[in-house]
Length: 511
Image 1 (tube, rainbow, N blue to C red):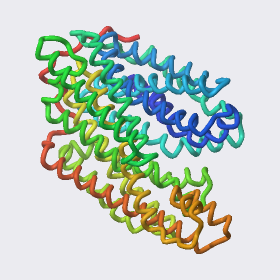
Image 2 (cartoon, rainbow, N blue to C red; image 1 turned 135 degrees about the horizontal axis):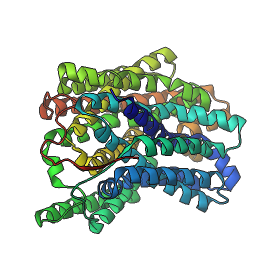
Image 3 (cartoon, rainbow, N blue to C red; image 1 turned 90 degrees about the vertical axis):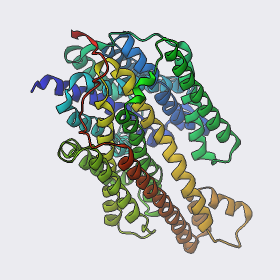
């Protein structure tokens, strides 16, 4: 076995880890940024949201650029831009400059993640790819708890700018290894630029993602939520209509409709997003549960999230071998069964539940997601040849990137609705009652000011109740994923016949 490709994968995945970390580590740095940059609440919200918007919107153009100009070139340019954006974040003199740097980081991050996934098709054969996908997914998983833990430690001991400068040595390693070990490849039949498709996909994904972010913040009935969500979906529908029409006219669309004729690719991509939905809500709700209900600080909350990543890794590692032994369908189905079981057990969580109980159900749920997500991604990539690995990987990434804001919005709205419904406080001033209903942290601040232990218990019980209902919804999503898997996924191996019907790409060698 050529060890060079595995070293290349390790370096590329280190860069993927940096991209994912940048989305999680910022949450603990917001108080420092507010002071250092004199940033408003609106500025802080955009520091988080802007990165997610550009990260989602850049994936399809990145895939097109890789297929057209060379995937290695796009990856190296994206890495350089990510390093430059990180430095600009650290030394930004104003909120506007910092936001511009965050937007640059998002676009660069989309290029890194898409080209990293494309490298799985370019570097690894059918037999090796499932294991490579597992390693790739683990790199994404590690950032989820590591970001808050690392960020909390750095902010306690170092200047806040190091939260971003830590990316620079990672970028240097990625550039060095990428230049030496990652082969250049591009589509032999270079796709056209397709400006209409590129612009409409970017605008549609930005608008849709913004709507989903607003849904999590303001609720689904807010005018801005409805306008942005419906508008984004309409623009994306127009994008797919244009791509189909362009293909029928003999043109070269950015996303070839022929990709979706392979059922394994279509359902692999869809179900990878479905698996992601099962954990997206946990990233929103569990840190709040640990801090507001159990009284943990930010770093302790990050440590309590370790079963989350341990479960994901435990599910991802055996996914390839299991798919070879029993087939992709049963592997994915088992993943959704475990995810549903973990969520079902978790729905009995109370405000005084033991830490070990929470750790067990969270690990079970995440092990199922790790298994299903790795297997579904491998199924989707098994239908891609090197020829279309760039845009094909971008389509898979689109499903996975949009599941984060969607899952947070759905679970967040369910949790908030049942948290408010479970509050039974009476006799409080209207403004105090409104604050309590606004958020669990606002409620606890009111209870602390009033010195009411009974109100503290009521608020914590209400949040735990909302969490339980959101986990019932998560179990329902897992059940839906199980049904779709059994109906639409064949028993083919996870690492299958890559792109049998698509001509192979040109390769311009290494270095």
